Length: 197
Image 1 (cartoon, rainbow, N blue to C red):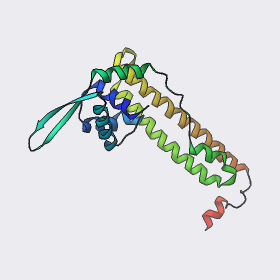
Image 2: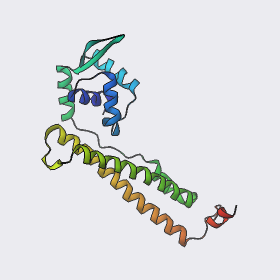
Image 3: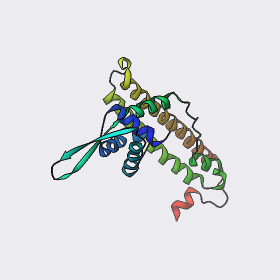
Image 4: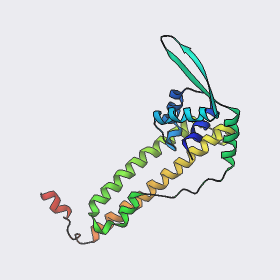
């Protein structure tokens, strides 16, 4: 997916200025497709040059006019075609997993601490997504249309974070078990030696 499509989705939901689109990215779209405000403004210009969005200049007191963007008919056609296209299957690139593969060459205590740190981050993200679901979709079973589609994306985020938290719990437990039953790794200090330093 290109940033162009994420911006077109935003404008299909509601017209907005570059600033307002950036705020929507900060609050929702950015959780699954991030972009800086500078990238958004640059992409809006490209979309306008390509005829996929239009804008209306709105006068402001003591400030330059603001541009309120809307999706053009050509933009709606392009968005419709993109939604119907096949999406590539995402390929996972995860540095943490590669580090885990190399665990025998490092310090297990350090790696376990790093896994706990990631678990805490994913736990916070999961709590945030669940709070969004509680706040924005209290009656999800009765939801239809755009609200249903937004809820389903949110559910995807919740399921991904649940999976990460469960996996990291498993990894931390396994590493702790390994450390408690294995002799000190070559070239590393035991926890007692670290404390005594």
